[in-house]
Image (tube, rainbow, N blue to C red; front, side, top):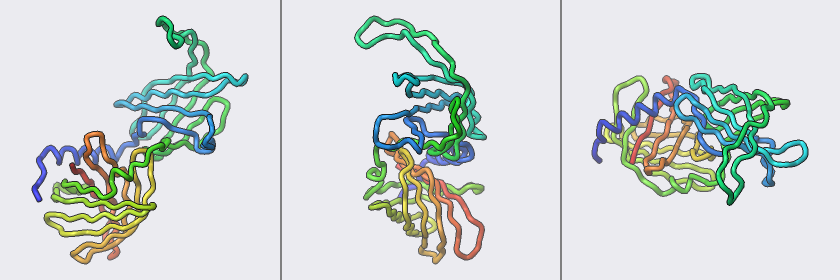
Length: 251
């Protein structure tokens, strides 16, 4: 096993910094109570830096389709956005010459608040607060199952990195991770997992070759566009020692 470069440490530090903020996943979202498998309402969220862009597709009272847009400052620390919705008309029809659209209405203000990167709440004009979730249409677990990565574990609050091999097995909602570290030895994690958009969350038990064991909660397990693996594990030892957080980064 080879130690990763300092660039990988910087990547791990970036994961650590991001974990303190509430950053919703960019992409399609849905209102939890309206997921029936039939046509309905939905929306897209895109956050870049501290700017959020929101596009909502829905219907007027006469049944005709429409869309609304909103953009503005996103409070990253609190995971909140408040803005106005705007409707547009007279844009370019399919197959015709380009023309600019014009604003045609403002149904009012709305708000978003996020619990984590995949879940939150939305209040639309004239409606009560509703739970929302990142819409899942592709199971990312296949990207993990039977795969191995060489990388590092970084500890929060301590300047250290441990060269590690990560071996995953995912099947029928169950997760197994064999973690073989350069310094600290081998640990086996077994638990259940759920898909959260393009990420996975898991919880269960762990046991290591140094006889340490306890429970864990894993968040933001993700295979990125460049095929690298990143994730966050929060371990609670069975011997009542303080819980600790580890950041995974590997390729």
